Image (cartoon, rainbow, N blue to C red):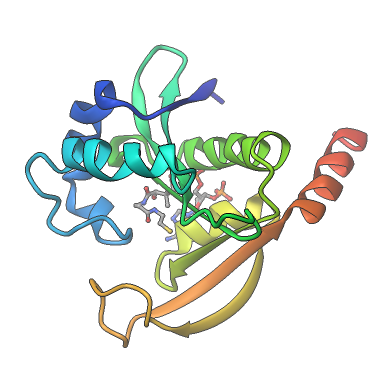
Length: 183
Ligand SMILES: CC(C)(COP(=O)(O)OP(=O)(O)OC[C@H]1O[C@@H](n2cnc3c(N)ncnc32)[C@H](O)[C@@H]1OP(=O)(O)O)[C@@H](O)C(=O)NCCC(=O)NCCS
């Protein structure tokens, strides 16, 4: 497994985000606008992410490989003041799928969320047809909470089915401890 790391998204990443997020396969299963607008990355970083980061509402990280290659984005949205229940979101550029990068990026994000940022639980609403994304969270110990018609995202019809996955800090601590005891 290649070594990867997370670094806060800044305008330095706009070009890479713009290039990779413009692939229809990325916008198809994420909340990103579809089709991805020209200049969408710069607008997102400057007008949405940076003010929300200052308010403590959104945190996004560039997923970088050891050789410096930009792979995708992983982050936390809709952070409430009490940090009780935080949405996790992620995408990996299509050329880099199937190499364990999303799983490793989310593993590092969990560590940040629960040991540094003080979040109490994480959740993700995922399209039922997005099996790769569900697999990523299952591998990390998330539990399936419920299946429900899409009433969350305006970009998809309500006939689309969503599945919600969640992991609490307490569950993560147990998994983490077990992992270290039985490598
Ligand atoms: C979902 C996504 C992040 C996965 O990224 P990735 O780096 O390829 O993920 P990983 O390699 O860490 O793990 C993918 C897992 O899904 C599995 N998988 C892939 N396609 C699958 C499918 N059609 N059905 C079932 N499992 C599938 C892989 O085999 C792997 O599991 P394994 O390790 O047990 O073999 C990536 O496909 C993506 O960015 N998709 C578009 C954006 C998106 O949907 N983001 C998530 C929104 S909720």
